Image (cartoon, rainbow, N blue to C red; front, side, top):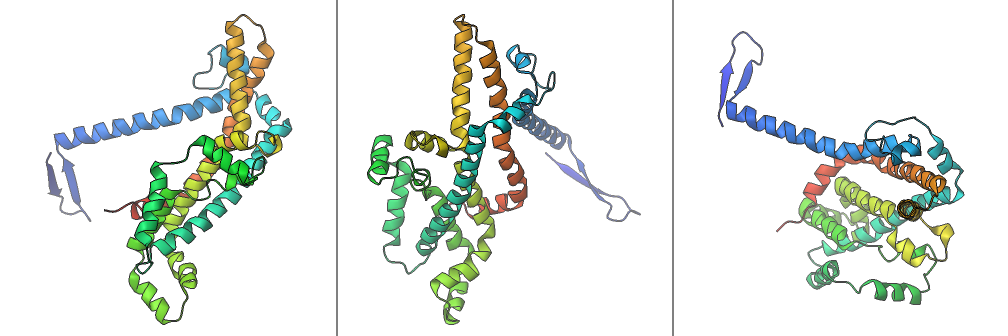
Length: 310
């Protein structure tokens, strides 16, 4: 692939790059792939939104494939009237907010000491933390552990078991090591700053990008989490997050499909669950779709600077 630069006299900043044939073909392929990826990514979102505002009978009959058919907002009205769904939404907001705050405090408090060169046994500690990324006790030991701690059917059963993610902690540790100059620590120590004050006043303000990325990781994980609540909150339905209610609705919708195949006529129930599941998906996804564009400028910078380095 060749490029030929031609200078056009008499024009200000008249350096124009004329692309060769190979460059044009390559650029066309890149543009085509970008469009295909955008279509593949956007189609499910458009379909789910269209289905959420279409009459359920049109969804079941297959008339809705891109644009809404017979627009109605009855599904959203049902969501707003449902006490269980509103309770689940409030619980999800609580878990995502409180859980992310707890995660970030503990992750920073673990990552910062492990980034200090004079910490004794930090290699061994890091190795033990890394070990948990590949091996765990399993579901049954985890359940017994939560049970013996008296956390069953409490909100702590959702918040505490995953209080620190080893991968996020190592990403943050590597950022502190490679992106915060050691001279700043020395200058802070000369000025009389304690390690805690150095972390709060100097290191964290310089680490906004990676902190936003890790915060987003934790928040998305809490927002989409349902397994811990399903396993530990079996007798505490009032503490279920929204995703558990959505899972139950999806199961009921699948049962409706099975009943229809078996010749059991329960159309009204099937229509109700078919309408609700799409509306709840939209309602549950909106906060993340709003938050991500606001932090996008931090995302690329933070993940590149905080990536693992050999």
